[in-house]
Length: 200
Image (cartoon, rainbow, N blue to C red):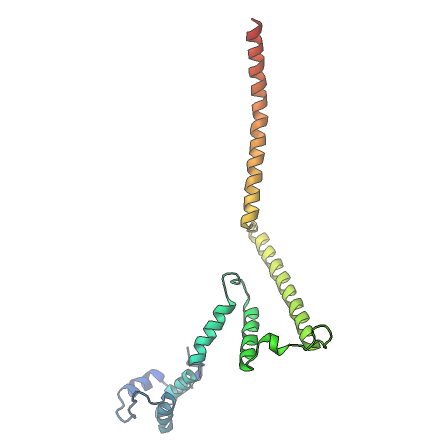
């Protein structure tokens, strides 16, 4: 996965084998800083390829904030928003992080002293309109693409549960009408037969 971080002349697997049997390395004790320990190893210049991999690994965002990231993600993606696009999710998550870094809520950030008479943040209004226009355009393009794919493969659009129920009810009604229409000649014939028997 981190092959692009390693210089082509380095043989990381070989360096890793040497690293595992190197008794000159400083001991790592519980409570020691991992970054400081690796910095001491990197200072020796022994394992250039492995050092590049470790630098890449240590640069990955980690710590308590990772858990809070998943918590924020859980607040955004719910059972009612599973179809949210990554662009929308990223926008919401970025907004949440900005507000959190400022220790503010959106209401506090854009609060006006007088809701009716105070000036409106024009930049905010412009951003809202732009975002809305982009979202509508994206949805239309996605719908057109979906219809094109359905036509290409000859698929019928998937109907909702309510539409499916209405279609089923209508089919039952039509079947009942056809059944009654088919029964009318039969009943008329039975009435004629009964009338003839009564005359005899």
